Amino acid sequence: MTEVPAPVGVAVRRLDAAEVDAVFEDVFVRGVRCRLLDTGPPGPPGDPAAPQWLLAELGDGRLTGACPRERWYRSDGPGTADLSARPPVAPADRARVLEVLVFAAHAQVRIGEGARSGWISADAPGEAPPWLRPRDRSFLLQGWTGPGHGRSPGEGVPLTVTAEPSGARAVLPVVWADFSARVRRTRGGGAVAEGAGSWLTVREYWAQDPGTGTVGVAFHRLTGIATGPKPTGPVFDPGTGDEPAGGTTW
Image 1 (cartoon, helix red, strand yellow):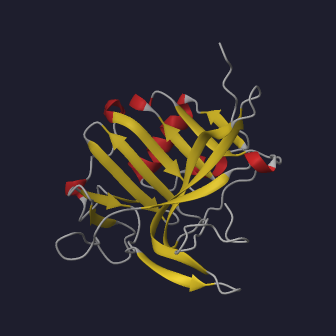
Image 2 (cartoon, rainbow, N blue to C red):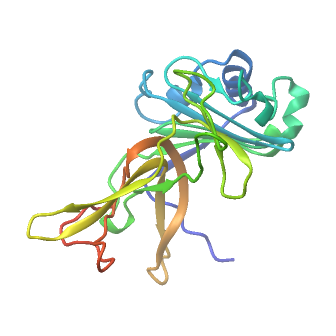
Image 3 (cartoon, one colour):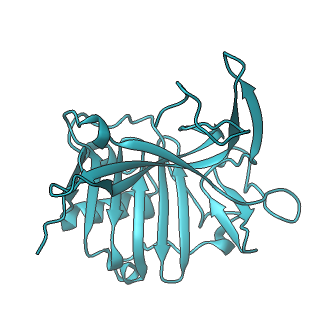
């Protein structure tokens, strides 16, 4: 059997049962910052002032949330509970879990089906060859807000109800920004197309086949949800679709 090459630049650790319990206790029962996400990865602890996010797929729906600092704002709260699954608070509720992701810029906790297993991942120490360095990506979140489409559940609440392209409504853990685009002139008379909106950011880790030298994405983790200009490159010339020389890198 051919051995699958390991991704470079990422450290992944399996959680024990007590650590899985601690994640559920913090995020779903007490509604406070996930301590394991800050202290569990290798290296220095995470920034206690940095935001955390929650995406949970359950057998009867979806539950999302944002923790700007100390406490969670979740989709099962006032104003959005009708669009959210119930949190898996009791041990018996864990049978409903398909996947739970709790993540921040520096690390991600993933708990699998039935909450029977979990992992925490973060950057590994050390340098990787240039062609295998982790790469950051950003993906535009699609949806519509405003009358007839979506709403905010309240001032200061980092959640937005949007209408998805399919017509279904969703609660996204972000203060929404609609997509817009502009052309920015560069030195030398060129131009690049820039977009702004609401983005999911992801870090990709690559692996190399020792036999053929082929490289490809072998692992990824979510790193955040942001609004504003596209947080990662590359940018493109709006006329040709080419990436300008010396433009934004990966």
